[in-house]
Image (cartoon, rainbow, N blue to C red; front, side):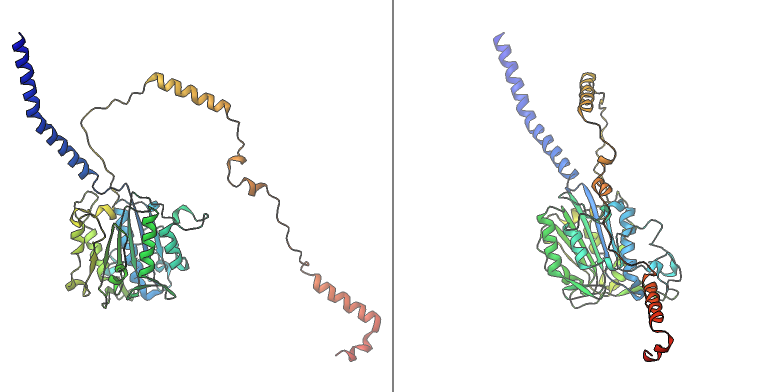
Length: 395
C-alpha cells in the first residue's frame, strides 16, 4: 500500500514537471497579448490644428487645416478634444463666390467647412503667445474649456501647423513668428508637466523640416512637407474662386486619410510614403529618433482617431449586487443627507458674491443740456447788465 502511494505521488510530480513549461508558455502568451492590446499606452486623443495665415490669397492654408479637422472628426476625435485655430475666416470673406463654404478640391467638389465647424481661436486671437499658452497650459483661469488643451500623461496629441515659414521659423499673420527653439522648449514643458504620452507634429510650410531640428523631448514623431532650402508648393487652382485650394503635401496626406477607417491597421510607415518628390515637388521629411516605438508598430489611428480599447469575451459575468451592501450604503447616504445643512440656491453658485455685491458708484458727469443751459444763462446776464450797445466791443 505504501509503495502504491509512493508511485502515485511520483507520477503526479512527474506530470507537474512536464506541464510546467506549458504553463509558463501559456502565461507568456497571455502577457504578449496584453502587451499588444495596450501597446500604444494612451487612453485619449487630442488635436491642435493651426492655420497661421490671413488674407484671401492664403485661402489654401485655411483649407489645409479644415481638411485635417474633417478627417480627425471622421475618425472619432470629438470637438471637445480639438483645438482649432484659424487666422482668417475664408467662409465669410466678401471675395468668396460661395459664402459659408471652403473647398479643398477643384470644381468645388468637397466643402470642408461643413455645418458643424467649431473654431476655438479665430482672427487676431491666433498669436504665438496664445498658441504656446494652449500647449503649455499657462492660460488665464477665465479661459473657457473649449479653448484649453486638457491633456494628460495618457494623451496622444496631433499638432498640425500650416502657413508661411522659412529656415527655423513660422510666421503668424505676417506680424510675428515662432522659432524652432521656442517650439522645442514648449514641447519640453509639455513633457515635464506630463501633458502628453506621445506627440505627432506635422507642418506644411516652406523649409518645414527646420522646425523639428531642435526637438529634444521624448516620444515625439515629426513630419514636414519640405526640407531646408525647399519651398512647399500649392495645388489645385480653381478659376471660379481665383486661388489655389490646397498645398500639395496636405492634399496627398488627406487623400491617404480618406482611405482610413477607425479599424484600419495602417501604420505610420505608410504615411511617410504618401507624397514622394515626384508628386510634391518638394522633399517631405520625417524624424523618429525621439520616438520610442517603431513607426511600423504605430497605427495611424493612434493619432488621427480615437479608438477605445475593447476586449470581447464570451464569458458570462454576473453583475447582481449584494443586497446587504446596497442596504447599508443606502442607509449611510440617508444619514449623510440628514446631517448636511440645506443649501440655498444662491449659495451653490460660484458667482454669489458678485450677485450680492453693491453696485459700483459711477463718476459724475453733467447732464446732456447742462453746458448749453449754462452758456444761455451767461448770455442773458450779459445782456441784462450791458445791453446790445456793448456787443461791438466784443466782436
